[in-house]
Length: 324
View 1 (cartoon, rainbow, N blue to C red):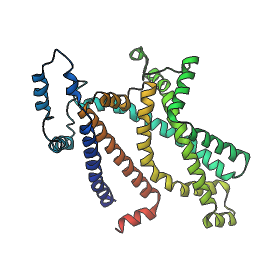
View 2 (view 1 turned 135 degrees about the horizontal axis):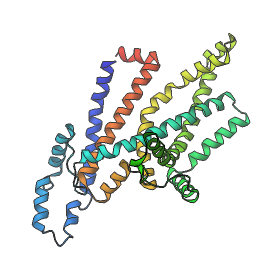
View 3 (view 1 turned 45 degrees about the horizontal axis):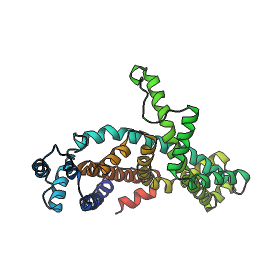
View 4 (view 1 turned 90 degrees about the vertical axis):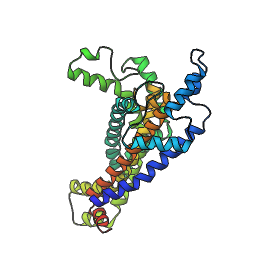
């Protein structure tokens, strides 16, 4: 397994290099940069702007700039944000827990919804309940996440049931520990449910399809012939149906994080989405690159976790990796 982990980490190196280099090139090809905007300020002289470009190395060739950034990024020195006047790593570490809270919460809710619904739909194939569950899946697959977020915001603003924007109330620091947790959950409801409902729709269909495949397999036919209790049968079916979803876990993490960025912007959740939007609009080179770099690493870690879980669940995967 250690050999497997090392192999996966080595595979990640060209991925990180490719993503960061292409992103750096695209940003540099865009007209202007943050320092060019300073030229519009009459209080800042052209000499000052040129001096800042030399300090940050922005007057050097693109490849040299990228190599210098990469050398620093290896030790997580991600540079200095032009807009926020603060180290990029500090800004990301401040925002990333909020994004992870939203992504993980929505993922747990989505799986808690999709696994039972998909399993019930498969076991009751062709029934009214199966059709109702499939209608739910089709409905939320057809609704864009941003539109659903607007609907939730409209509902929250009209009813006052849930707060709009932010992660905590103004009197948050005066609350007890339990009240603080409940306050964060209260603010989390709208963005988390938006992501969870959209994600659970596709997952429900996939769970139903996987469970149906297992139900029609020779193994289940044999178990039914032996008169195995339904509880034991369900346990075996779900365990065998979960393998493909464990593989999808890493990609699900990445899609939730990217989807969370859009929802964060719409509902005003103070996470990486809002930070990256401000960075792109202001052409804050080092902040954009830092966000992309950390995001790529999170994707790689998510895929590695999925691979390890799959190897833990399925002995055949472990055997394949050890035989390499």
